[in-house]
Length: 373
Image 1 (cartoon, rainbow, N blue to C red):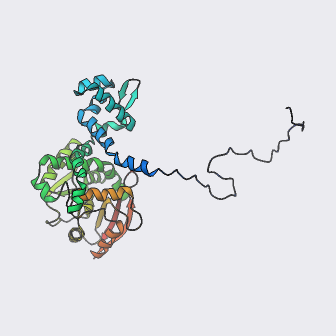
Image 2 (cartoon, rainbow, N blue to C red; image 1 turned 30 degrees about the horizontal axis):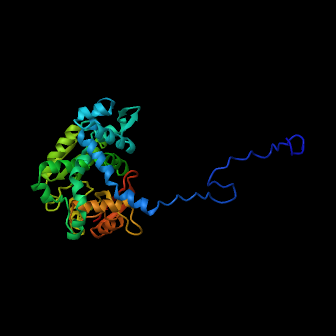
Image 3 (spheres, rainbow, N blue to C red; image 1 turned 45 degrees about the horizontal axis):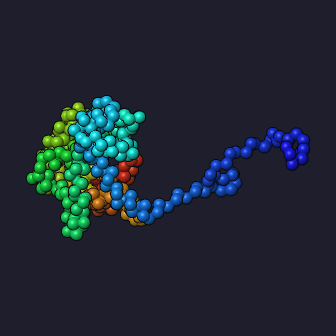
């Protein structure tokens, strides 16, 4: 090579391992732990803009669902003009909407043909196997309530009340949408509880305020000869029967009409309070725990499942917004922390055995407690 003196043949040190390729953020041995490069901060205006305009994504998804877009494309992949014709929509508007949904990842486009990914079908297509569209139906009820949040905060009242009185005296379809929404979001969580807290074969489980009954049904499916009892309001039990019948597990659960706030609990070996305490005030929580203590035998098990906030430190986005959702729906409710609930359990003569996280994507935790003498 010009300009380079001839140094002769290169000597290879066979005892020295070859150098590793350079990787960003990775140091050589002996230099300490890797120092990851910090993620660039989002500019303030960009962050504000993404939050302010975040409702547009929700509106686009709800519009596509309402127009029947996902049902049509689930039948067969289609071009925008065909989707517009089948949904009775304007072709230009439909094409623009479909492109927006593609950008969100809920549809794929191959050339000019739109395809619904198989994994999304149960969540976006009514009647699909494992139909989980209840949360989208509920979103139509909640959308205006969130828009009126400032008034709710000013007055201290829920904008879409779901108290016992509202469920008993309100629109039956509103009850159905609510129960289906909770069922949708609880199905996967219900499959995890029996692994975290298995029950004894032949024992009795009381599922208090269990909504669709998916938790007690899943326990009954996984526990031999389990007697599972669902205690809830009559309108809720009507919906629960329909949901469990559609999923082929209505025979796994006994239905017991009652109001957990005012009625005593029937005796059971295990009592499950799933997604319940987060809807109640501290006074109501203590009353519910007292009734659970009376219904359990000494050594009986109490399971408390739900989203639980942080007692100290900065709140997570998921738990803080869940508490805000509880404010929109219920009076005096919030995502109580596991520490606070554990203190209440000790006050009401329960011994806490463990607190276990359900794991991603859930922010829920499960508290296992024992009824003391």
